[in-house]
Image 1 (cartoon, one colour):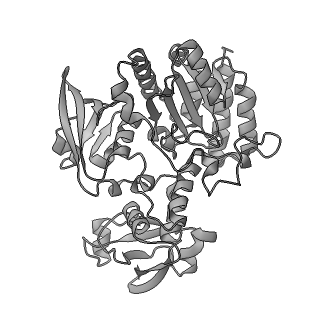
Image 2 (image 1 turned 90 degrees about the vertical axis):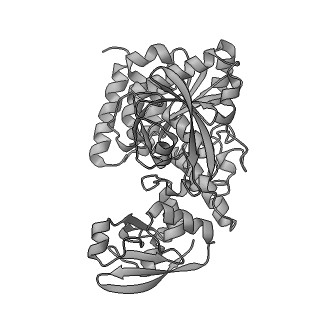
Image 3 (image 1 turned 60 degrees about the vertical axis):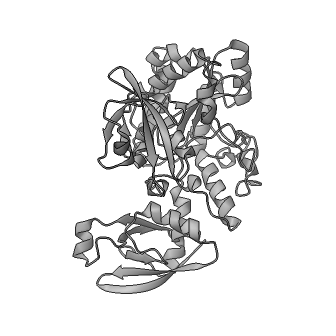
Length: 441
């Protein structure tokens, strides 16, 4: 068997068995097995970022840090390919590579990325300057997806950025993370006292691990528990390019695949086939970099974009209207589950289409959110306890009665309410309209 082939075979066999079960049953075994296979790997430094930075400084190579939630099914195919694909080896060998499997003690001012992904990569200079981010929602949605061309493009672009450093420092300034209320995740109140800086390898290691998605959840709980508005960028982190009306091809750094007519992207003049070189002064190395530029943008802004079209570069202006961020689709994010408890008492809502709304006698411009599911226990069971039922149609929540999706409703509620109160909700149950009280948590 070729070198690393045994590792690929193990990962894919493990993934297949897990997929059939729809869950990782032996989470402890998965984490301990990963450590046993990787802690003495010739390429990967295991779970030690400080050592990675020291090695990058010693060698002059850029630092690549993979953050991987091992028990999570998502991205398992991509993870396997990054660890074993021979074609990636010549690129990876130009980096100092770190595999980080928990977020307990990461520097939150430095490690700012899409916490809802189970596989992310950040590229650094040894001095701590961030070159860019990589994260794939394609792989997050499909555990069996193993395409690495987008990852390859990000590696190549990060190496090119490293070769141009420090002359290109200006184009990297807005890629850097900013100040945070806490230095590490285990200092955030929702996590403090429950987790330590180090994993408990002598006991139940999984229970000692802070997963990346818990970081975003803990930040939202911090603001909510203080009776403050949850910042919109915490509710709608790392907005997808689709939020502004364009899709990026997964096999390029940032090539436009399609543009939605009438969208902000269309009004700016973006066209399919354009390569977005920079957005808001930030040189892009991946789709995740595009999302980061949107993540940092204010609620109404004009972002300059450098695009390459037919071999020539031009500057377009992406104008973001007021309220653009709140229309981000967050329905499939793991972090949305905790927000459903805060804002919806555990309801899971989906918007009815125009035809179905009309069939039920609902106005086209009015709210029509079907209760397709709900939590059963603790805070996620609050709506059930309040009398909501599956297949109810929510037509008004407090002052909100206009047509909107679940994500927008969550954001508006978290911006306008505080824990301890309640909202009057009107639902359509069959042919009868009813009023219920939804507790705010």
